Image (cartoon, rainbow, N blue to C red; front, side, top):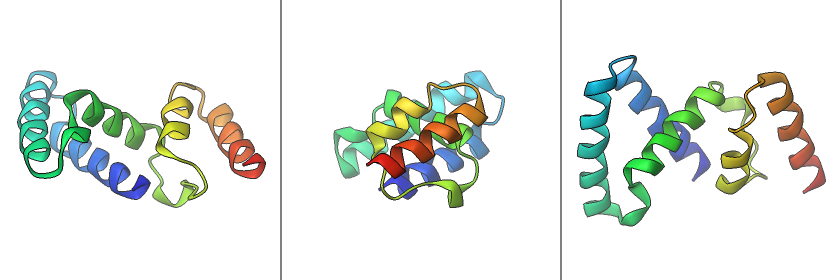
Length: 95
């Protein structure tokens, strides 16, 4: 599921880029369609988190299968990429 969230975030980032007004409308449109098809896990807020997830972890190969979406939500709050990578490794190694 982590890879799916990363890929959704990538697609949103590529579609929106730096166009803020366009992004708000697109996220609402996507949220409505995805929630209708897949359920309540695709709120605008969750789509924004997926976009942030992609921005924080741009290399899909650096993702750890041992970590859950909750782990990544916490790790995304760490702004410094070096520190974020350290905590990612520590989480994975410490279970």
